[in-house]
Image (cartoon, rainbow, N blue to C red):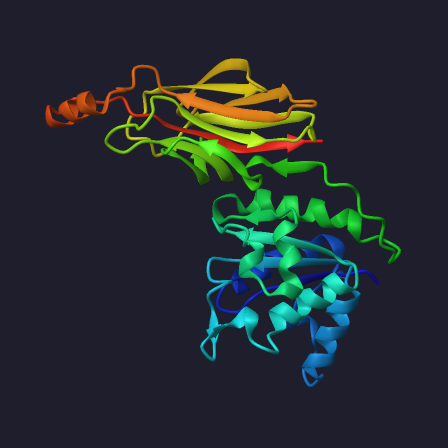
Length: 313
């Protein structure tokens, strides 16, 4: 029978593993989900059961939290210690052709290949899912939707479908403004874990926040939710958002706090994608910005985000 194996690190993602286990077990059945804490009967030798399950699973969910790379044992990161079960389980799943899916917990970033043991370095190139406490129900549903087609009802494993979505934040950045960052953003009460955020402190290095990516003619559609951050100091501001596809502008689109907007556009055969966001009236000159601060005047600083910008093939 095809199973989903939940790989997790104690002291890092054990609580998230319980949530994922409960969600999948309710829908797929208890016997189709393997989590070491509940799937091995009392008195049964531990090691052979882990090896068997990791070697025969159809899907392995690798839960990666903020301490996944830093939990130590004997002075070394546990992931690099001989006999580390988290690494061994991933090695077995990769070796036997299972679909291995990183699940990033909270605002954790996907590790780079250089930070991983060579035997599991391929994990850094796998498309990931996210599980955040602010959007847990939505994220758990996304995880279920991703694994359900891979576990056939008759015990068979259907061929892996081609990946059809890519989070823009996972692509290499071709260039960006100093005040633009990648990370989590809250828009209208919803958390977007893989966002592009344009936020200045004191003054803006550039009046417009820009970031650019190389698409390599691989995608057809772009989609993002844009708006003013929920925790913006100036709740009354309006953000302006523009997309440039191979230098050609699309937009502008405007959005305010509590009133985000979904931007969708065709990017078929596009080589480059540039996102631009700004707040009208932002003080552009650093010296003038300093004078405004000294005089207690607002520099109309932007607090804007592109929530989970996504590309579709």
